[in-house]
Length: 225
Image 1 (tube, rainbow, N blue to C red):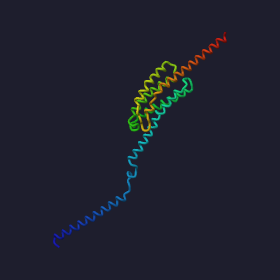
Image 2: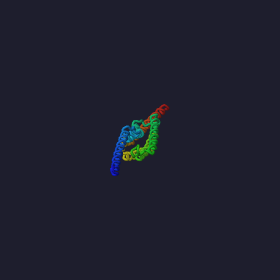
Image 3: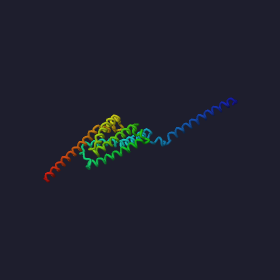
């Protein structure tokens, strides 16, 4: 065989060897891919699912916190049905409950200033804090009226409530967080009138007492005659 023939035969053998080795390597790689166990990332819940669960938990936490605001509205409406006697157990127990509510609101305001407030409260934390501060001022006037309805300052407190409540309603109009309608919870438009009823009942109690005292005084004078 000539020198050229030998070289040509060598090149053919080398090409065939290279092809066979390449095919064997491809098959081994494919089999390994088919038999490979799923990675931890593949078997764990998707990041989207985990994120959705976290958002659900945050929404539930926000609802639990913000229910403090929602529950205060029916509490304040009870004032309309009170008898107007600041010395009664009714008023004393009510003021104790109201103080508890105020402490919860203060705690909520503090919580709203936390690092994750924007995520939990849909970026409305500052807006809620502002509303809570206005409501806290209103509650201070409510307490002042209930404790001293016969005092001249009671009417001034009612006037402030009458001014501040519309501002609060305007500021929180349309405010919704998750499932809670906070705009509705802050609608305390009947609060001033309820305080007015309480004061009127206190005056009626005082008038009735004065009338009774006068009758008793007349009886005493008649006995001495």
